[in-house]
Image (cartoon, rainbow, N blue to C red; front, side, top):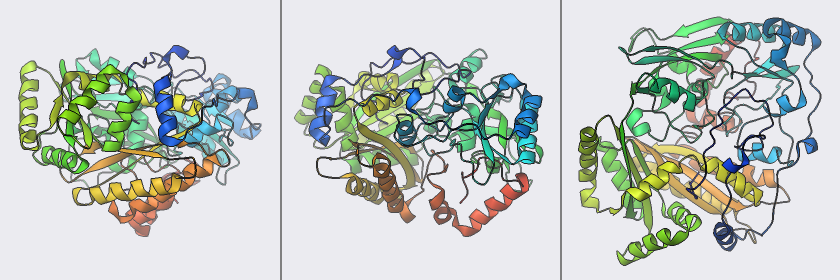
Length: 559
């Protein structure tokens, strides 16, 4: 999501041991000063631009939410207590509700009393790999579904507690698997337990002068295991790589037993089975440890803002950088709609001066580009920056300098809190992403944008559909869409479901249905289109081998 207000405070609470109900990105019980407040000028702009009525739609009290009684069979409960201890088999209302779904727009609506959240029958908190292994064996024996849970940041239904054909379903919360197991400074490898949250991982590595460099927008909440299970991609992927590029080994618990993969930096011993586990979304096993490639921590950083005139010119600039292999670590291009939204919602004298400057320079369709470099010396950074900017010289980008870049960097995690504030105002606000080869990128953006605008437009409701390139490669790039439209009170869930379906159909043969959000539940219907029925059959045969009883994350990844 676009960072629209750069004065948001960042929460310092990364304690995953709480089991309080989450009412949005900020958990209940956290310092409410860490939440976003939508400025008055932003509310006025949204009302004028979208038809948003002036109203308040607060979070529903916990007592208003329907939480069915736990259906966990007594025999299964007793067996799980024998493995974990009764104190780590949580069947209370608040604990179960706190792990009822992820953080998609529809998930958040359900926690606001619109629809019913998928409440698990219990929340389990094992402390190590062996406990996870024994839990899976118990659940397979008793026919209980198991949903692995890290930071709970899925926006595609990946952690929804779906029973499928099982008698009950439990959430396996990996919050206690929170240790840095080892660091190999010679090979530059680190082994993490799966429940380590990203900020803690960076703090632990910093003690060794290292960094992972994986910084998605979910950074504050997401876990190492979740990154691996979903093929996550961070904002600095151009410099550090996607998370699947970083994974050197995994330790996995399956109903069939333990599975360890990764013995060398490269191997020709058959297909790379690590890549079968990475991205498997808990459907094949529970990742309990991840060995990752780490790098020397940067000591200098420089982020800058630039503007190009028009989407085509901006795309050409990013493609030039990618194909000349001179991308900045962070390379991000906003289309004119996202640029206008960011300027309008930020407001203030500085933004007004930027708009005036661009008009004076004859820029008709401003597209904001953020470039960020990180290095271990000022000399290295200066050299890389010169190389990047030299490649852009012929495209004549206008520099907004370091303030624009630093403003983006400091507000890079504000989006989820801003979404909470927008939900409070009655806005349907959601994101989706895709990727395509450069040849198809323009057509893909037009098709998806058209589908979203067409589906969401209604009398009194005008949607804003913004887009940016979030990750670039030599052969193509990803597109990340942000949607804002007044919520349809008659059918708020259907409003977004129809729009998302229209967008996924528009993607069609032009690109992938997901670049980094994963399959989850939402994208299951489109998986055969992307990998073919034979591909689905291959994945299904793997699941039958590793999970004969079908207890792992029911309803996810596979049709």
